[in-house]
Image (cartoon, rainbow, N blue to C red):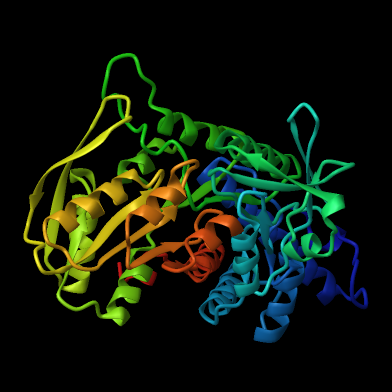
Amino acid sequence: MKQAGKTRSVHGDGSTEDRRCQVLSANLETWLQTRHRRCTRMAYPPLSLDGQPLAWYNATVLAQIGGTPGRQGEDMTATMKAISRQRDRKKQYGLYGPLAILSGTANPELAQEIADRLDKRLSAVTISQFANQNVFAKLERSVRSKDVFLIQPTCAGVRYRRLKSGKCIIDPKELAQLSPGEVEMAPASVNDNIIELLVLIDTLRRDSAGRITAVVPYFAYGRTDKKDQPRVPITARLMADVVGVAGANRFLVLDLHAGQIQAFFSIPGDELTARHLLIEYFHNKAVPNAVVVAPDIGASRRARNFAEALDLPLAIVEKRRQADGSDIRQFNLIGNIEGRNAIIFDDEIDTGGTIAKAAAFLRERGAHDIYACATHPLLSPPDGVRNMQAAGLKKLVVTNSVFISPEKREALKPFLKILSVADLLAEVIHRIHLGESVGELFNE
């Protein structure tokens, strides 16, 4: 540790008091960094508070609280208490620098909504797709030491690209200003968006981001979470591994197909649920004489919790699927549905076959109006939209966790209701950035 008398003043009037204060500030910064390295075995970037280096902030706090620079131990404690008071007043600070929001091409509308609610601009990034389908990403501004949240659901969607350069257009405002002759719409598969997620994570890591949180509202391959037959992979575990290996420090997901997938990750994270949004919608809707229906045995636990929150009875459809998933048949109904209005509840709608056949089965058993709700409306072609149209639903309630194309919205417009998860994700991102409890948001 350097002695105060041997340190030259950089700021201020050059007085001895000023030099001693600077030394104390530098010592505190070094001490805190060393402490965190020992605790986490990771080299954190320089600490900051409200966008200012901690050394500068420490000197300012000492001046404000009347600390004596010569008493290093006492003043370190006083400074840490002042920082705690800043946290209690919910001022942004952190070990990882300022908050930054970044979006891939999978669902830029959702990312923009989240950024708007956090009063932040999306960090500028150029994503290009070459003629050989390779993806390239370049950050337009440095994210060094920043707390970065990358929003990229791993679902199928589309990419809007400039015809000549192949540059992908993320900003909806920029897209609206282009003529049809300047842009093309190219389909993006699940695997395309997974690779893009990994490329962006690696890009952030190589730019020395302070912390990288992969915000994946829809987590692909969630159904392959166990070996249910010989000689098959556990792809959900593979997905969790590659996200961590690419360089993510945390993950944030929404309504996993199976909760145990959280354990596949070797990095910390949070699984959120949009169930509360759906509960609030149907609570306000006040569907008369209603019963919640699980479309298969696998959804029975989620449906039970949903029914309990709405204080409604529960019914379960016994569904059996062929080994290759090509055919679905309903065999039995557990519960009473005759003369009632049914609310079918599930986590995702893929081709819509389960919902459509469950609706037909319930109608045969005497159900009146049939509603359906799910968090992830994949509506995979070619049958997703067609099955929903044929199901005869009174209302289909979903969230915008995945990209819903304008064509799908128009086709299902008479009975489609989309709830936004932007408020939920924005609040959780805010809490994670400030180091506050996420569980308190859901009353534990």
